[in-house]
View 1 (cartoon, rainbow, N blue to C red):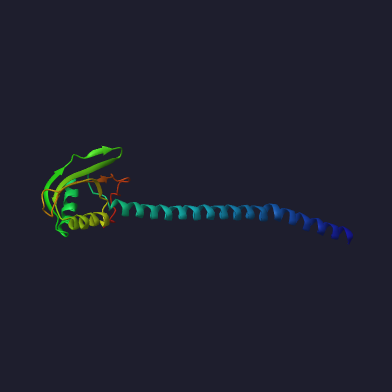
View 2 (view 1 turned 60 degrees about the vertical axis):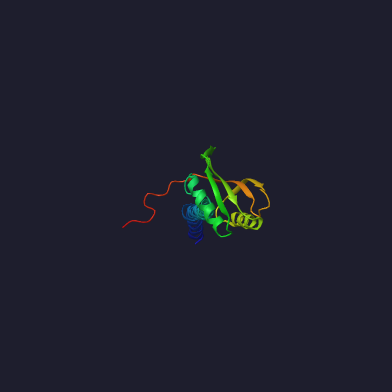
Amino acid sequence: MKPTFLIGIVEVALAAFLGYNMVYRPQQREVQRVRAQQGEERTHQQTQTEIAAYLQQIERYRKRLPPEPDPAWLVRELVELAREPGVQLTSITQEDPQSVGQFTRVAVQLQVSATYHQLGTFLDAIERSDHFLRVDRLDIQQQGSTDRPTIQLTFSTLYVPPLLAAPANAGGGA
């Protein structure tokens, strides 16, 4: 009985050794590989979510800028903003767009007639505008005893070309 018992112990030890090396260790390696893939996928998904959030933020900022490098866009915005406070535009001069690196500066010179209160309301509307508008220059000339001085203003904004081209079929297919 002793030799049979010894052979049984050797068989169990051999089976345990083979089971550990042929089944358990490869499965552990596979489990580690799957966990590593899950971690990579989690990181990839988190990165995609962050990129999508950044692209949405960029698009919100882009909507504050002109859709094209055309001073006429800036003129339309300023005329609309001048309407409510009653600022009278007496002269509009569009400047040629100027390339500044990857941007294009779009500028307009206005001569307006307004009371100080109207001017303040107009500048406040510029400041609160949904669009990025900058007052580059402001000159006020009082002529006589009138309450409406002549005001020279230079406004500008920046055109930024799209960073990424829109997909050819962004709206979906039929």
